[in-house]
Length: 429
Image 1 (cartoon, rainbow, N blue to C red):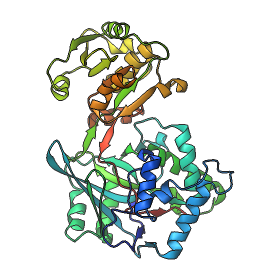
Image 2: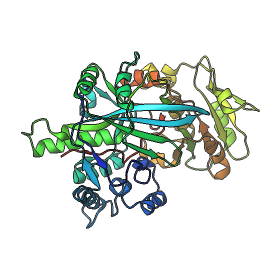
Image 3: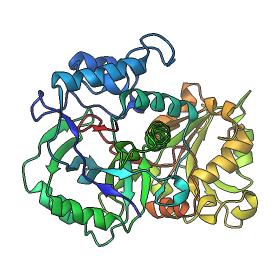
C-alpha cells in the first residue's frame, strides 16, 4: 500500500550540531514579529525559505516565491545546505514534558509515494483552506522542494518499528535543536540499506493517516500533477514523492491535545438566549470549583465547558442521554463522525446558535482557535461572545473517521509538539 523509502536529504552544515538558531515552528503558526526575530538571530533561519520576503502575488516583481527559490538555490550553491551522500532514513526524537512527566515522541522521516486520497492509502482527517493551498503551491513550484515534513501516522500495535529507532539512536545524533517551548529535537541519519529495506517492506502493508500538514500533502499532489504534464516520460521522479515524518499511532508517547473555540455572533449577542438554546439538547450546570480536566472526564457523550458573555462564569454542557445524533445532525455522514465532540459543537452549537459553519466561508472570520483552554475562557472578558473548551479527539476516532473516507471539522486535533522545520530538506526536482 504505502510506498516509503530513504532519500538524500539536504541539511545545514555550517552551524555545527546545534541547529536551534536555524530551525523554526511550522510556517502557519509564525507571526510576522516572530519571523523577524528568528531572522535577526540567524539570517539563515529556515523561515527565509518557508516565509520569504516579497508580495504574495506570483505575478508581482520580486514576489515571495521568486525570493524563496533564489534563496534555496543560493544556499545550496554556497554550501549553507549540503546534500547527504547516501539515501537515508532520518530518525527524529522530540523530548518534552506533558503534565509534568517526560515524554519522547519518535518519528522516521522518509519520502512517501504520493497517492490521491480516493486510493485509500494516504488518508486525510481535516479540511484544508484554499488560500493556504495556493500559497504553498506557488512556493513548491518555485523552489521545487519539500521545505518541511508532512506529519503522518501508521499502525504498529506490536511496536515492530522500534527496531529502526533502536538502530539509529544507538549512535550520537547528527543534529540537535531546542525550540522556544524547550522541546529538544534530535536527528539521526540511518543509511543502513538492510534496515531501510525492512521498513519499506513493513510500510507496504499499511495506510498512512495525515496527522498534520494536510496543506503540504495536497500541495505536493498538485505539484506532482503539474510536473507529470511537463515531464510525462520521467521515470520514478522525485516529484512523485513527498517528505513525511512517520509516527507510530500506537506509541503511548503520541499526544493529541484539543483545539478550543472562540466565537462571536453576527450581530448583538445575548448570553441568556445562547444558554437557553444549548439547554434544549445539553444538560447545563455551573462548573463550580471543579478544574477543567475533572469536569470533562468520564462522560460517554459529548461534553464541553463554555463561557457565554463577560458576566457569566464557566459552565459544563453534556449531551442529554435521549438526544439521537443521527436525527439531530441530518447529514449523510457516519456515526463515528457525528459523535465527535468537534462535530457536535460545529453542527449543534456554532451553526444554529451563532450562525458559524465551514460551508459558509464568510462566517469563519467570527471563529478562532486556541490550544490554551484558559485563553478560550478569558475571551468573553476580552470582547468576544463565547469561549468553548473541548476534550481531545481520540486516535481511534481519527482512525475510524478516516477509514470511512470522511474528514473531521477544521482544527479537530492538536498533535503536540509541532514538528520543527529546518532539520532536513528534500529536493522534488
